[in-house]
Length: 351
Image (cartoon, rainbow, N blue to C red; front, side, top):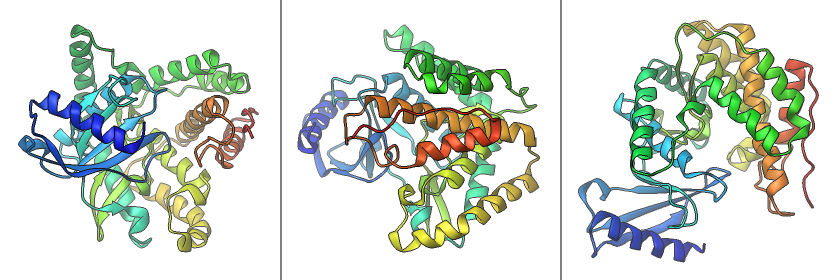
């Protein structure tokens, strides 16, 4: 859908949904650079209900994503926001792909810019502070909200939220289904290793963001203003979240991290040391089992490998996003093999 058509479709939908036939844009939807598998737009409304009068974000999922994902994201963001954590509140969520071509969320637009654009001096401090704050929240509040909203959605004839996938057992089961159902033969041995080496549950599970890195942390000056991009959230051992951040920062090619070009060579040089200091800094605040940390690093690699493999099989030649067209997948495969001694194979990129 062209951006202008999307803007008209969204306005028509909002007029009906909000009961405001005179609703107009103060600022029409404009693209914002962001995720690799979503489209993100900023916009503002005129003659809107009070909750919709500030800067807003439209986050639209791809046609391949079920509407349940959007519903889970909304519940997750609103739950952590209700606990005092700076996540954008979702104001409206639709699982109906016929409206805009994909399920979508409309949420508050938080102030600030990504931590990657705010300089390197405070990155480690802010990263650790915001992650430890998240892990201090009550995870049961999120699980109870997910179960409650799942029941409400199904009772109203809507989709199940599939909230069970937001636990490690449920997530592993879902990965296994995707590997088997998607014909990802090169990943079968890898999922087998993960199922056979599952560590015991920790004494206390926490809310893990699952994609916690500087591009998803907003700051104003040296103060964090919010954390965005919650589709990978899960309730798990805190080692899962640390492993995810360690994997993303340690393996993702610098050119796809959203950094200014002038900073890339500097970041490439200092990143390995920063990752080590980040993990050490977390361990100084909260003990982590080294075996569990290694396992969850392998699991986080697998999450990326399944997505990359699916996208490479699905995409038309030349149509892959920049992440999946890069060396990212092969780097994740090498890291998984280094941890587990299990070799795997990704589909080749169509040319």
